[in-house]
Length: 210
View 1 (cartoon, rainbow, N blue to C red):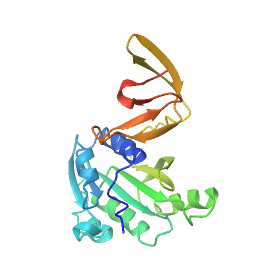
View 2 (cartoon, one colour):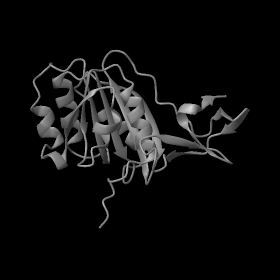
View 3 (cartoon, one colour):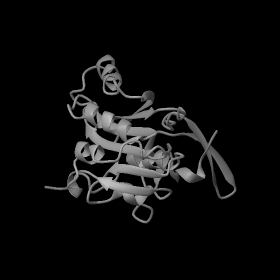
View 4 (spheres, rainbow, N blue to C red):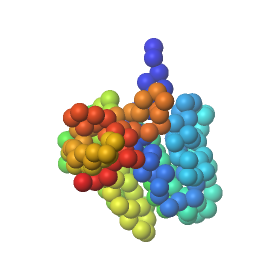
């Protein structure tokens, strides 16, 4: 059976880029043996936990010293439904540890309708100091969301480039195109994502909003 976590797809690379630009010191992250987060979060120290490290999320988070991580963030890359019973426990443990921000990915499979899962996103932070800043919806292999939580300074929402117009240069010409979707970079640029236009794929770093 192929390992579905071996490849880090375009939307996940995009989310890592957002997190890597947050003003925090250390990022504690659920990662896999492939170490995507460790590799992609280049601006921060990264502490990994999760199944592949023998450190389940609740045990790891509850084992942290209380209120000692006020400048840190936690990336709960669950890929599970927000209905999972351990999620509220993890959020309380994040609160006790003092994390200033928490980013959590959830699958929308069996998560109910939009009203139900949005309600659940609020329920899982009851009894904590966290507030829901924004929700980013995406689709790599299945419908997913990134929920962004904070305590004090509200982060800007993650910008969705799909459907937006960009400009980019090819030789002496400047083109204006609408982004159709995000693509994983080619083999010689695997840790970046590209914007797919109707007649070309361009590295996102060379594109500007039109």
